[in-house]
Image (cartoon, rainbow, N blue to C red):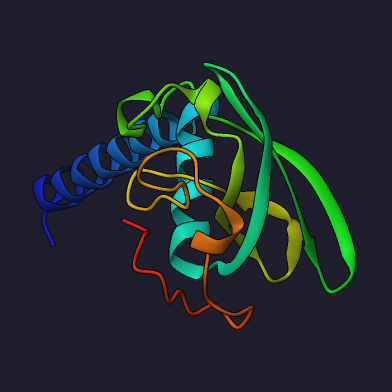
Length: 144
């Protein structure tokens, strides 16, 4: 091998290493918003369905409660970036809802994300309108 070939190979390798380093540095600059969106999407695709009750809602958060295996959870979800997915004012969302939770960590849950909503279409429903069983099958057809 000639010296030109060795120098060219080392230069190409150095260029690849620099490109990989830049890509890694840019990829690590994940914002909290991106992390929250990723959490919602994972829960949407892998979460189990349960019923819950919205106890309060503001422009930025939905507060809700639910029970899994006899353990009660009271939590909230930031909805400030999901306002365009709501069909009514958040203040009118109190009542029964569907939620998705992580089977490994039932405290990790969502009521709404970019591709799914457990909120009723009109915003408020009665207990009689929320059907289905606890196995995760929704029988009302109300979810969108």
